[in-house]
Image (cartoon, rainbow, N blue to C red; front, side, top):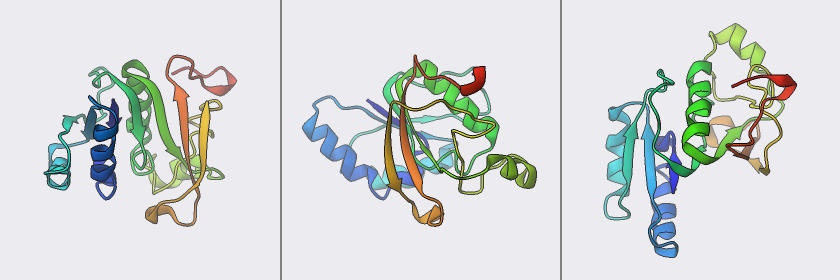
Length: 173
């Protein structure tokens, strides 16, 4: 099972991907996560006739409301546009609900400059290995990925096992 949060950013490729996964893996469950109900209208249209999906709306403002249980939580282009508190809440909630977290990151980017200039809201880039995130080395990395929103900054897709995921320098979640 896969929880894609935020799925609205992936509607160009996700319907075909989910259709193929459902064909290859009987019982594959795709859940589309969105910050608001408004985001789901285009998603439902994109998936119509291609695959049946589950949806969940979570503002990520509340770290006490659980996400659905899943094998993998994918966030391709979410943290790059959210506040730091929303990103932290996704990581915390994901660790509790998913066996694996697969998160996109922008290497060689200084998060502290972002916090100082934009009140903690990412502007298309975030480095999960730098302060204040400081996530430890992932189990797997897919390198040299980019998105139209961040052509000047390369993207990495990093995979962590939720139960063994750590922060560097003794930081806590």
